[in-house]
Length: 393
Figure 1 (cartoon, helix red, strand yellow):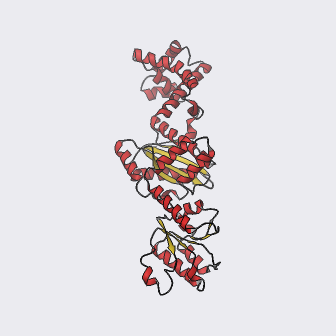
Figure 2 (cartoon, one colour):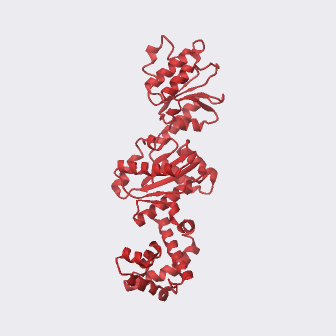
Figure 3 (spheres, helix red, strand yellow):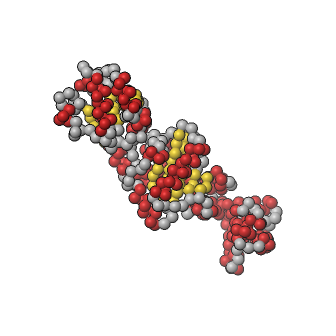
């Protein structure tokens, strides 16, 4: 995971503003450098090769440019040539930044920023950026932070704090996608993914792609999240999976309008992925789970388990004692939209066999599948059982 120029700007959104080079906000930052007198004519041969290089976020007051503002443009040109991540100016001498410097920064996508808060000191920037770079390079950082975020579910401030630790560039609107590795080899590959650089260009600086729970989690955010962007996110996750030699279904959360709901989005993506795994679909959206969306948050409660167990328990006992398939037949009937014919095809049997097995239910638990009110109880009991299995898996 990278710390980017965009992350730096969002972390210091009230202290630093962007002047030029917006196209370079995705540039990763590896460390911070200080530009003091290194580019003064006559000293360049001494310092130029040693002090600045690719990935540095460079800080400067341009003390030496007080009498020669053109040196600002020269500094921008040089830093762009070595691949610096960006230039942050603390304009303590109130110099007028040359238009040529701004034009060049825009042309080369070199973020050029100015400190707007006099209380932001360079030593603190060096410490803060260094901590974030080291934090994000830790392969377990995402897992620990997401776990902490999920534990604070219901505490909007806590969720937001953890979300912005994961990615300071998150926008409010977001969707989560989750895919789980299907075998030990794939799990090892995903674990290794956490220690290498992520191709942020594929998902954008406002998004997050990271290993989580032996799988990959992708959170995509935007000013306005469209269906097309969600489809692109699913394609991007599938492409990353293929690059890792990983296969399996993807779960997609609802679109959420506030970053306070990121924990909810992640859980929805996980639940949708587990449902996709059970149903054999390549991708399942949480919005397609129907009544399960209402049941999932409460499925493991004592009241829900008592209701479900009183109905499905006797059915499963009957199947075990008689080597029967009454429960599976009921589940197939529900999965097929209460179509006897479709359930028969799924089970590989005759429609009359399906009807016979469904007819046995009334004698086992007292609920007749042909009576709408009693069928609703059977359906709800199965939904609770399925939701509990999804939660526990």
